[in-house]
Amino acid sequence: MWRTDDVPAIVNALTKMLLRQEHADAGHRCKLSQAVRRKSGASVPALTQMLRDPFMRSTAIFTLIGIGRAATAALPLLLELASSESVSDRRSVMFALGEIGKDNGAVLDALKKLASDTDMEVRLGAAEALFKVKGDAELSLPILTATLQSSNGGGRLEALRVLKLIGPAARPALPALEIALRDEDEYVARRTLLPPWSRSLATQQVR
View (cartoon, rainbow, N blue to C red):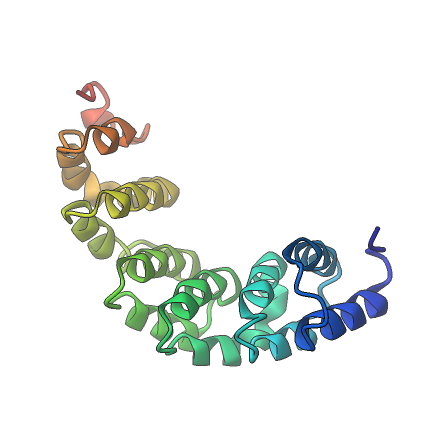
C-alpha cells in the first residue's frame, strides 16, 4: 500500500518508475498518481518533467488535472503541447488547461486556438475549458451550437453535456436545444434534457 503521507518517497518512486519506464503497469501508475495528487506541492516538478516523455505524458496530465490550480508551474510546457501535431496530445492538454489555467492570458489564447481545431473532440473540450477559465460562455456557445448541427451523433451528445454544465449562461443556445429535441438520432433526442432554467421549453416532450 502506498503511503500518501510520505511525499519524497512517492515522488521518487514516481520519477524512477515512470520517467525511467522501469514499470509499465497502468494500475500501479494510477495508484501513484492518486497518491501524488493528495500531496501536490512536491510532485509538480516531477510531473512536469514527465510531460516531456510521450510514453508517460497521459499519466502526468491525468495527475496534474487532479492537482488543479496548484499545478500552475506546469503551464509553460502544457501550452507548448497545445500546439502539438498529435491529436491525442491536444485532446489531453485542453482538459488540463481548463483545470489549471484560470485567469491566465496565455492559456486563454491557446484555448481560443484549440476552439478552431480540425478535430471535433478538441473543439468541444476547448469550449468547456474556455468556460472554466473565462467564467462565461461567450466564446463557448458558438462551438457548442455549431456541433449540435453537425452530423456527428457523439459530438452532439458531448455538446449537450457541456451546455448542461454551463447552466443558465447557455440560455442563448435554447433554439439549438429545441432543434435537438427533434434530432433524427433518437438517442440524442432522448438525451436532450432541457434544463430547469429553460421555462419556455420545459413542457415540451421528447419524442
